[in-house]
Amino acid sequence: MPKIQKFLFIALTIFIIIFPIWYFAMGPSESLPGAAYNKAENAIWLEHEWVEKNRTTAQIGALVSNFGAHKIKYVFVHSGPIEPDGTIPPQRYSRAVEFLKTARMYGDKIQYLAWIGQVRSKLNLAEPEVRFRLVKTSRILAEEIGFDGIHYDIEPIYEKDSDIEALLESTKTAIGNAKILSVAVNEMMPDLSRRIFKLWAKTAAPLTEETFVNIARHVDQIAVMTYENSLHSPWLYRYFLKNEIIWLTRAIDEPKILIGIPTYEKGIDPNAENIENGLAGIIAGLQNTRSNKESFLGVAIYLNKETSKEEWGTYDKLWIR
Image (cartoon, rainbow, N blue to C red; front, side):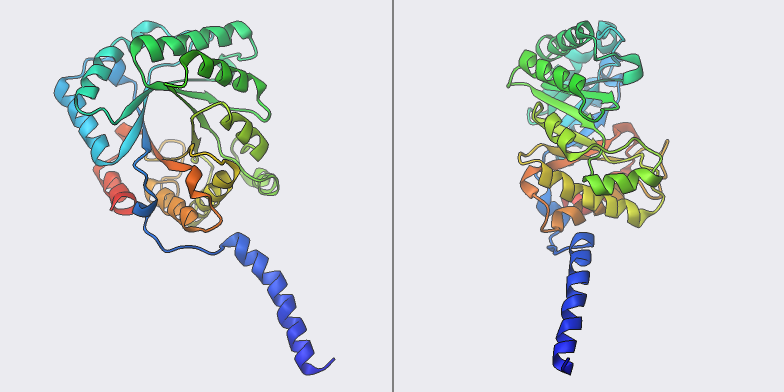
């Protein structure tokens, strides 16, 4: 074989091997800052005390002003947990009407969703009576109490979870299109990546794309809980978030995706899973030209009372400015 042909053959072989590795490991990307992808549709989980205990007008006003300054649009207000029979005692959200009325005095752009949840070991969604009562509870919170929607956090969600799908479909029918139906879901991975991840990660298995898409059909938004993954390396958490953005936004065609990032420290390695690394990974994923930016809504911070001034500063630096 002539030298030039041999050279071209080797070069082509290297290209065929290296290019796919580069494309799927890194891929072509933009160089825009985080603020370029911020649609001002971010979310935050808010602790229970705001709807169960007395809060002054000044306290609620300061809370709402802080959310507005940080471009938070959706607030998941903890109003549960759900009882095994599908109900929630009204005393658990006895101050909700007052809280919502006062909060809306300080601006009508923020939407407040009743955050209700439970672990599956305490809530049998396979029972139609339980689902019926839970849908009724959700309708009361949305219509009578006045929340702008319902945010379910029922864990875990299983593969091909017909029970959760039935609950979501019935809830959406009950609360109507004028109210938001949101759900917290664990991560999604393509099948090959999921199989590899399950070999070593001590966490709930990520959902397949098929299950994720089926759930997405019944809701207005999905808050993906991209934390508590037993990741101890900052770069690995950033890389995981980057790819999660690419996978999720390519799987869902509509603007429904919120990416959850932690500001709490219990149960995770805060040196790896934190707001700085989370935002860095999200931005890298959005910069990647393989991602579908149209289906991305924003980030969701967990949890309000765990978010320090320093963490808000990091959020502003990476996501607002």
